[in-house]
Length: 222
Image (cartoon, rainbow, N blue to C red; front, top):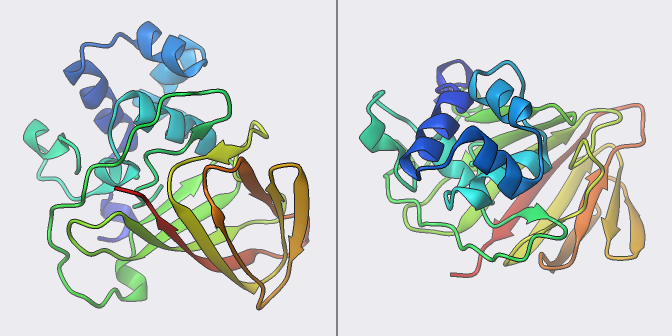
């Protein structure tokens, strides 16, 4: 599914929120943002940051994958799962949240085992990051992503570190990234690879003048 055909993010969040009997104010309180921000996201007047998107999917007990899967427009398509992008890092959350929620498995079949560049599902986040899904296998808990950090791009526009269940692997193809992992920082260049337990607070930023592009895998524990 091309980026142009990805259903509106805001309406899917609104449907899931209403399905769980949550008010705008209640969801905002649960994830620590203002009700006006939730309203702007649901009406597609504002794109959520990475940390806000993770927090919303955690609070609603859905995967990010479910927010970007194909739909025929009916509400029944929106049950978990139907996601970053196209992605499935639903257990990610800002530091300070204590609830652990595992993602639901992907249960819809992909159209083909081959994903052409023009057919990638993608999501551009307001923190300067683009996620493109490179593949999907039914009933798995693995994200396979091409991630681009624009100059100045960060994992979270708020600067918060992320943590989630599972293990993260990344390989930087070009550009440079700074990985903050716990209390340590690592500068990554082309050809560098990373792997770590995702329960460790972490985040990336691009301090360079050129886009940083890499392939990432996130393996969730089931």
